[in-house]
Length: 424
Image (cartoon, rainbow, N blue to C red; front, side):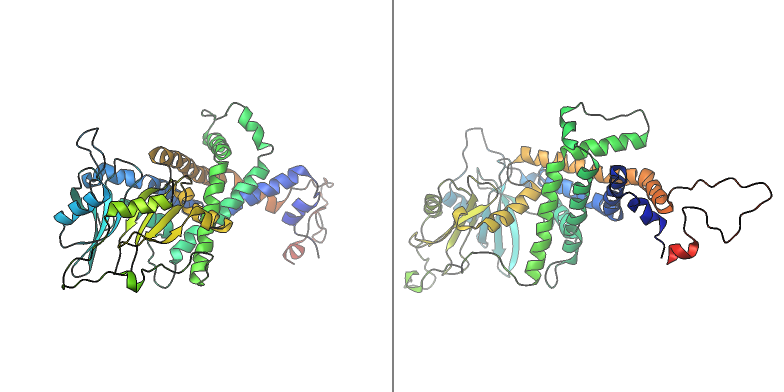
């Protein structure tokens, strides 16, 4: 059986460097082609999602936190809690969350009688409740659109989550094959960047794609690996498989819960400042960013925050009656796999180093988005032609025949296969 021409074009000289480079280039292009537009959409929405909270800050005054003057410190924890309760006496406060940037208001998650839940924006300097949070603001919308295409979670992970996270595979393939195509790419770091603007769109976008890809290698690798973990995370979740070493939830022993003699009498509790101080004593270097209040009489208060390693949270669960530490979750309690997996989300979103780090993620996200667009433009102008030539093979040079002597139909052209052979 004869070998088809488009296969023979790459196998006639398997050790030929030009042939192998051509094959790698086609693999690189085809790996990204079927999902260029989808990739462009996901990269664009992810880039906007990085700074979505800052956009909300610009358009929603309640999100902003303004101190009365430059010397005003943040309120103490217990004072802040009491101030919120005075303004919202019917609300049960479930959680307080402090943002990393000081210009943002903190968020109080509350529940009202009738099981209505909402979040309130609170000024951390004055304790003033500045208004309720939108039920679905731009930040939540962009993260849901980017993360799972707004497709709801019904029985397990949304299949939109799978569609988005599976893009990590062609993205990683495109990165690897791109480095194979770009021979000795590291030399370009020591050369003057080339971006030709007056020689047509094909040359411009080709230069841009190579230049942006060269300086975005670390970012593309980071995004693709973290997105691949999100795919694995969904599979583990839907198969009810856990890799966590976290123990069972801590509870306050029954004999440690104080009782009251008069119905309706308040149970004596430690001040919130003391609870936080005990947690920060047990977790040196931790900056408190979240406080989860007890849901019932046997729940400890959970104080969580980040420390020297900004990618992971630590927490302490404190008995609200006597200040005893019921449970600790330190960095040293995680194994190597947990360090890797718990670091993936902040590395993917850039949400661990403040506003200026977000700008770095936004810039490289914009480069990645434009690389998707430039890859599509490059493909439409060049890869289609290269693929057609590879499929057709080289046009053979036929010998001239004497005039008046036509070639016999049964004689195949030298170096080609008959139609029957190609289809076998």
